[in-house]
Length: 193
Image 1 (cartoon, rainbow, N blue to C red):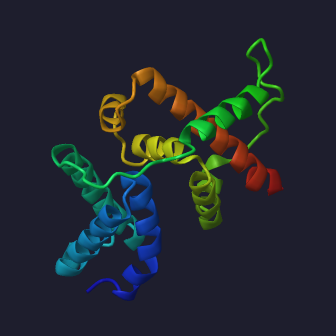
Image 2: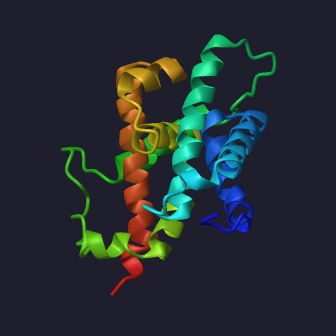
């Protein structure tokens, strides 16, 4: 075995948090993570160490989540989850984004230099801050961002899954990117030399 099974125990909370964000159902998220861990343990020889162990496991989880999303379209959910406050969060998002721009559509302040992106991406701490920023997005906004950027779903698939229009999807993606930019500026780039 090319990895220590205890690494899975360490990764599990991150995997569950991400799966819950995508699936909006704690039980389905737990199922996807369990299936992922089982797949890793049943075939330890498949980990070829061509990437980090975490990247390998997340890749498997990504496929399990896509399977769950596809299955969800074919199954009837008896237990729904109400996302009370999503509309309010969307309104506060719009207000926050409006505050970043003048009435002519220009940024209130110029974007600061973020230095060398390659060096930033090499630092583990950056990804910790990015995860915190994503976790603090409104639920729907964070979900659509992760579907687009992490699961690499196209707009059509996202719209079908979330039952929204393409225009709504683009607005939510814009809001997500604007909020992430602001969060990273305040919590990462603003603190760097």
